[in-house]
Length: 188
Image 1 (spheres, rainbow, N blue to C red):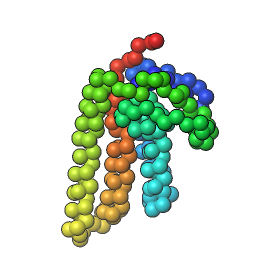
Image 2: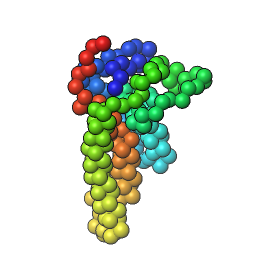
Image 3: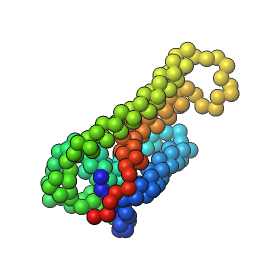
Image 4: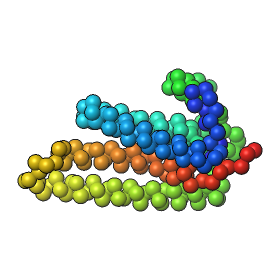
């Protein structure tokens, strides 16, 4: 796990657990606010895709795990591809920079592999609960209840919102669990 994040040109120390937990909380609060804001715009008819893209960008820039950006080492354990191309425009515009990893920095040791596996196990338990909720909503929709004048939204909209939330959680939760549970890192 990396101990430093460069955001808007400023180095942020991520060695203390409190800083990493604050990052995780701010990411989920920001995604929830974005989800609510995009609901106000058009009920996720067009903007639902933007929410998915924003989640992938947050994962790539801050969390890591499935790519070579962010604080968590890549889960694959493979070396990054070397490219002479400049960093993407978004990373330059936000001034978010991750130095290229050292020779063995991308490989996970046994302890990190156990932590990764445990985080995925915990994350997918939460995702199973979300899928159970989706199943219940789909079942509710199939049965077509008649007296729903008290429900302000339709079952389709609730189902779509729950699917969007489950996708956001599926993309970010294993890395968030790792950042949340890792103790304070030692100063080098």
